[in-house]
Amino acid sequence: MKGLANFIIVISALGMLLKLAVQGGISPERAAAILFLVVVAAALGKVVIKLILACASLAIFLLEYVNHDMGQFQQLAITVGAVLMALFGMYVMLGGMRKKE
Image (cartoon, rainbow, N blue to C red; front, side, top):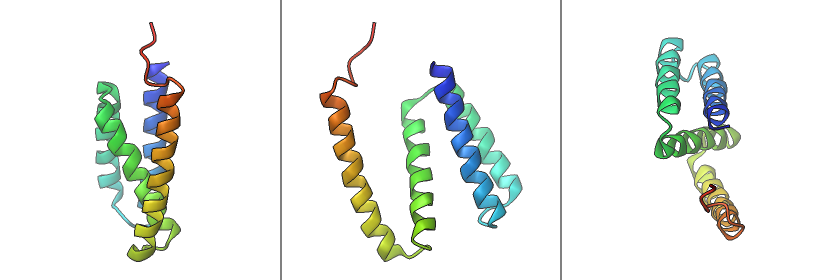
């Protein structure tokens, strides 16, 4: 199951990078290089790298949603951050951080 989760991270990064490349945000060569690094990071399985990838894709989505207006982005990021903290709290309370044997 862990291998499937790593592959899902690669798929989400591919979608994000394709969108950026099609819109002209980055060059296709740079997108390919970043995707290679994502595959290596997913293969290594480091939690911090996965967290950074998830936050980057969320930030890019929020920026696109508010048409790159930094004032609206900051307000939306604070709101989404509060929701994420609440969801993480529920995850911990329901025993999501317990080690499974």
